[in-house]
Image 1 (tube, rainbow, N blue to C red):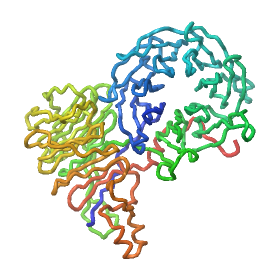
Image 2 (cartoon, rainbow, N blue to C red):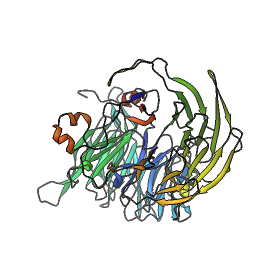
Image 3 (tube, rainbow, N blue to C red):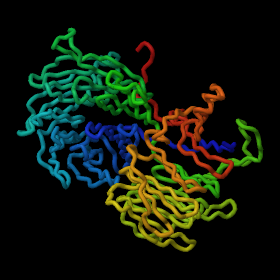
Image 4 (cartoon, rainbow, N blue to C red):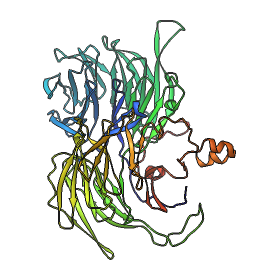
Length: 626
């Protein structure tokens, strides 16, 4: 392995959006996470917690609650008053329906997936019927005085529990009447000798007709729904408890607090071998610096997320069968997709933000040194351009050509192409007004190595090829796989000689196209995990693929040692574990890495402390002795 000059880039000011809510799908082992910017991410735990799908956000769409219906349909509600169902193949909203109840705070399906209950600002609980074409309004339950903050169906589908301000109400779904009213104790503010109103942030209706609630007074309480009486109460914290999730077996649950701590409760027998059991707080975890807005519970793990933008996954050691990588705690801080593009010939970087793009020129040095030296910069990096997107949809993909003269980006509703001209210290940008009318949404963009073609990866695994020239661009043809696939394209890679194009889609299939003949060449043998990255070797045209299970050699069990570990081995043992992969751990979290030329590499780092410094202050921070 030769030596490289490494451009360590830290001026990509990327800050992920906070997590607002989440919903776990036990049948597909997927977690849907909705963020504050309106985007939705789907993580697959069967694929090593890989972020399989991302639905871009929209400035006019805010999400307050999310749920799965019938294991394959995803719904959200938000403060704009609309119910949105998502197309999980095209990765965009399928349709939206106004509930006519003002801002919407919560949504919950019944156990059979035939109906949705939606909590509204005007105090109504609206019941919608789920039909194949969408949802259809069925009825309003008795209107209440205050907004409906949280909802939960009983497993029988005959009753709904609704949390509000100071009150939990139980509705009979058939009659629409409130059959029980439970008053929640307010918190006493000693300094003012007054009682503060209590917000029931989350609740769950257990099969045994017990309701568990979490509120702003820091209490977890268990109620008898038939008699409306308090069965058990536990003061957990002095701050709000914002989220609650119960395991499918109803013997464990997790709560999230405003001070960043999550707690696990378990249903344990009072006596060894006895039938009588009680809910007991067993495990506290401190994984977040800010308030935890969302929690989830699977058979083997707890999930949490909030304003600090991280998704924390805490395996339950007593439920994990093998003590392997699956038993390790994980904190997912960055998206599993590319936000950086590189113009290698021009040595430019394009940074993608939800509402704009930034074009930067890399710095340079005239000094040489030995391995490990930090070289002084002779010419600093330069911010050349900021390009704002049109409309309200967030940017879902972008690219810059190797020569640096073309920039393209796409949202779910449009594709934009720009010509960039450099004249001394000035940069001129001209939008190409006449571009091919492609009806499908672009999910991945790639320029050819000679900057003369643009490949547009869209839904249904189609690749549209556009020829670029100084005056205009022209549609050439569309490449399609032989099999009928409705999934969107997620990865593209072209060969340096312009002969081959590799395209991966959301169904984990990788197709190879011959660009000279403009036709499908072959399909890569299927693998059990989705591809996360791929590239075609510039000389041999070999296709190298990385998968989500982090095993570049599926049939080879050779362990990977980093350079420090190899130094500790003897010469004989070092040869036994030798491999072509070199592991370097000297960098901060990486958002991008690529070769610029034969002797230089560019890496884009994003230190976590830089993100923490830009977050708002915590709602409440626990101090010693309080």
